[in-house]
Figure 1 (cartoon, helix red, strand yellow):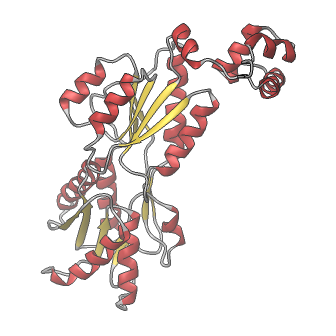
Figure 2 (figure 1 turned 60 degrees about the horizontal axis):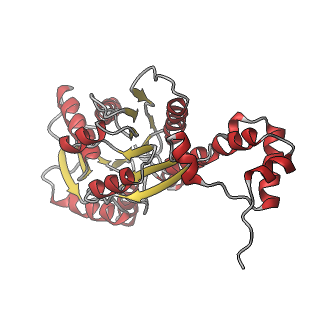
Length: 331
């Protein structure tokens, strides 16, 4: 025989609160006083009560489902951001479903379809959607759409990120100011990386430098690409004095290969990365990199979704979290 399903009224009675307070706790724990929330949570545990999320969604017109779409999670620069984001959103009673769109976003449309069919409250995208039809379709939906890790001129809904073109510009100025003259770019085949590389080359030449040499590599970027990139330097007409890598993983591989070949870094060859992963500070020499505040991206997404749930009007559709160049031993 199946056990009887605990009821909301039993939780309220045991906690010494009204059923409305229990519902408020289930819908938005932050709206309930801490001591009251603790009593309600203890009553839920004791009774084994499980809320009917489908019924709650119908009543509130909110599913409390949030879709977070990322290209990949293996050696991904987005991992820390996603972890912080899921933790904060889950604390508000949301269920975050993370889906992989693939390095070239080949599964993006299928994952968007799956999210919309489940009536998610929000879709969080990693990067900027370039397909115009997909952008148009998402604009027509009622779900909140947040593009992250970029700042489009015309966001689908809201964007939280930074300018990749600005990263390229500032890296060109940084290296020019340090006296480097012959940069070589190792560029993953992604829109973000190519935007940084194009901006770097434009501003480098505007400051009087020659056209940088470029090596394009597949995505996702990885350690082995850096090793191959170093070996390919001997094939260049002019040996570079600095290699600008599209990720810290590539920079790490290049540094390891340079050290094995007896090349002194940065005296004979300087190296920069992107992402400021933990390995950038753990390597020897430490890697000069571009730091993106992933925790702030997560917090801004959390703030936006809270505001939307409360019916508030957002002051802006663009949130620029900026970036920093972290100068270390490699350049």
